[in-house]
Length: 89
Image (cartoon, rainbow, N blue to C red):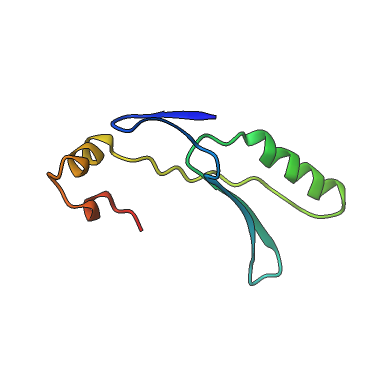
């Protein structure tokens, strides 16, 4: 898939997703997807349904969205602000 980004043009977004899970202290697991593009809630529902249908217990939590301030990005690219102003870790 190709992504069209302000001030950056178009480029493929291959390899921009991270799938994983984290063990929690209570013995449960948190499955996650991190990405730079939109991720279908269908996948979350399918995983929840699979876990629940095989004797587990699963819910879908509210996703966290982090979107850049494109005006700040443009100013960083133009050398008008330091990259640290974007708050990226």
